[in-house]
Image (cartoon, rainbow, N blue to C red; front, side, top):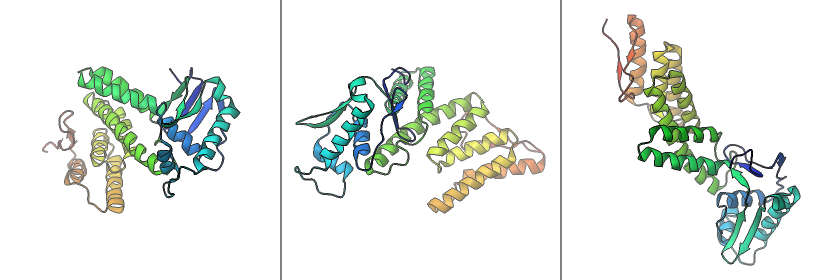
Amino acid sequence: MSTTTAMISVRCLGPFTATLGKREIGPWRAGKARGLFQFLLVNRGRPVPRDKLHDVLWPQAPWSPGSSSLKVAVHGVRQILAGTGADSASTAEIRFDDRGYRFQADDIWVDVEEFESAMDLAAVRAAGGDRDGALRLYRRAAELHQGDFLEGEAADWVVEHRGWIQAKALRGLTSLRDDAHARSDLAEVILWCRRILRIDPYHEATYRMLMLTHGQLGELGQVRSWHAICVRRLREDLAVEPQPETDLVLRRFLGARRRGAPAEIQPLGNWRHRVRVPAC
């Protein structure tokens, strides 16, 4: 199923949006209806006990079976689904039984589900030796990962799941980066490196790869710029110094320029450390 054919489309990678056809599902008024819908969506088809939902939505408040807060939130979601016609158009509904609440929808597309499916299948393909198939799926996952999971949301469960999605995205992007490097596609190497740093701004090996790549292109200003960004982030945010290899890349490129000899980068192997400057 694609986003163009599904009755309901939900995007969780980046700002949260949910649409029925071209009509946005909402508005999500004050209260916990939005958070409830998001949590049930991520757990779609699986019943979630009432006490678990209460802990997710009201982590600081003690759970009581007689509490009406959860019922109010459920009612709010049901009203929103009914108000946009989503409940009848795609049989999207919140169901309840003795095991808890669950969100059920027959005709729905959710970007984070597609992302995880692509990443999981890519891992299977890679393990089976189908490198090209794995790379195609990693590219699909990268297309879907347009931002952090539920960007701007700060609930504990969101932050935890966001980290899980980020870790998966980094695995895919790293594979794409290394493939581009093996093919000497320098523009694509830079693209994937920058995507990695959007997720993990402290990924020092990726800064080195950017420095090496821009150095191959003769862009020494970019080499110095990425080195400075790396050092500043590590020192100011983490109170750590860069690894010696990171400074070594900068020194060798600048030293080669002063001697008038281009620094050569061996295209394969351990690119994190292998910088060679020819003797003059």
